[in-house]
Length: 162
Image 1 (cartoon, helix red, strand yellow):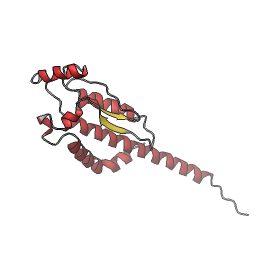
Image 2: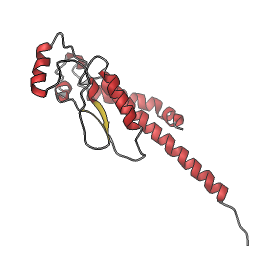
Image 3: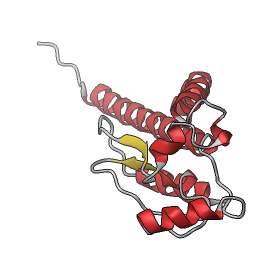
Image 4: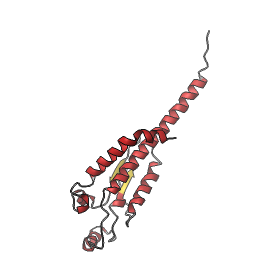
């Protein structure tokens, strides 16, 4: 009778599977953050000084403060129901990216999630209510930009996973 000790081989395969899983998780995390980043870059910041009357109207309709930055800061990653947390100011996109980064730390391989902009008036911006969208809305340029970054960096994201 011939016996082979498969213990070391099994251990090596388990370690390889753990490493591959970590690398894949990292790849998905970074892709998601690329999409959030592209979304914030393609979402108009606004200008409350020039368009204060519109901001006051928005305040009456939604209860939001009459300040810019809400749409840029409304990009989220959600593992369940979509939600809206208002962020204000010229750097509100940093809040969105920071929260998405923290949320993606919870990601489990194969877990479904959505990336969305939950600002109450985002459909207006997608419909080019702002000249800052250059007649292309937000989704089209965001998708193009995210696809280009992802295609260029996918292997790098995988390789960086530890």
